Length: 524
Image (cartoon, rainbow, N blue to C red):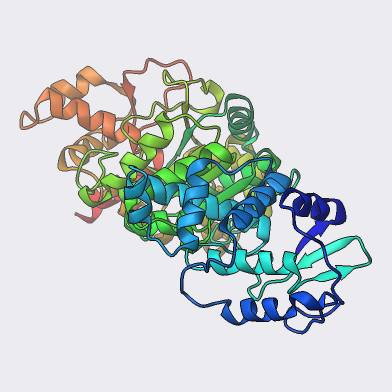
């Protein structure tokens, strides 16, 4: 990519450095003619040495390079080089390692590396190519040579083009700058939305939070297949102009925290600018979140949690994620992290959209998704089911769950010729193999005490109180275990939400889970 200056910018940079402009003929970066013959020998000597690894030669004035770099940054960003940045450039030109720069200036090597990463990122943005410690000397030397009369094009008296051999890809580069109306999007791994039903309240709640409240961390919770990811992708369409960067990642295969951080950072900075230790990687991420308003969506967070333990317990090898999320929630910045999970983390207090309010922590929010309600009729309409007068009953039986309804509607088409009335003539809810397969994964994550409570609740004809559960459960479980198990089941979305005015202590198993557990008992 070529770096283009206006003629006024070019004259300003040269005048500030006491450099003399020269005329160059139009041509390529390698093939050029110079009309200032007294510099030809000097320039040829410099050109032959471009790309070597020896320290910056004394004949090239380091102060001249620093002035040029300072003017480049100031012209394009409004920032001047500070003392440490000048020291890093000087040390880099002289072939010094970060450790030596740190030692000579009584600083930690980590601080020098972080400052250097930010500096290379700024220069990369200005120059239009990746700049790092290994190539900075060569790139800066090329700029000095071109401004002294060795390479470049003087076109029509208005523009100076400084060419480079390396060219950044236009879209995939992590350094491409977002514009006011077009943020940088890294959502290639997000699933494609084929249909979107209802969710007006939930969408508005999330939009208001992100635009007005600017929470640092939002947790989106709901049973498997309820539409969490679909809602998040739809949200991107609605609010993308509010952010400079939007990134989507899934933890479906549970990458370790180090691999995750490296991959995430490469959406924001050049791969060569990513530090090699976790603490510096987190520091760089947090600095980026402070500087650029960013939305990071992380899906399948439940994969970080331990099976056979109460909900939201991080696996030992995933503690790094917990610390990362905690830092993002606690440290000051204007970006947002949206976590999508079927298990509510321990520190999240969730509400349905109808009752969505700010939690006690000013900068965190949690939203629980429930069924679609009346909007689910469009699913049945799209499936061309008959007996519309029975659709409300079908929707109620499957709790308005979009995926369960879609799978059930397909089964009704296959087995009952689309007749909802005939399907509902069976005494209990029928679960397709697809629904049973998904529910089994949730069932296997439960503790034994949770399974016992679920079995107990599946046999109750109506909602029961927490006291009834405490009194009627086997004595093998202490009240403390039972209370924690009930709390965990709520966080896993196994229990119906009591947002309709009922007392919160009333417990009823979600109808789909009730049908699933009863089918297990029949098989056993």
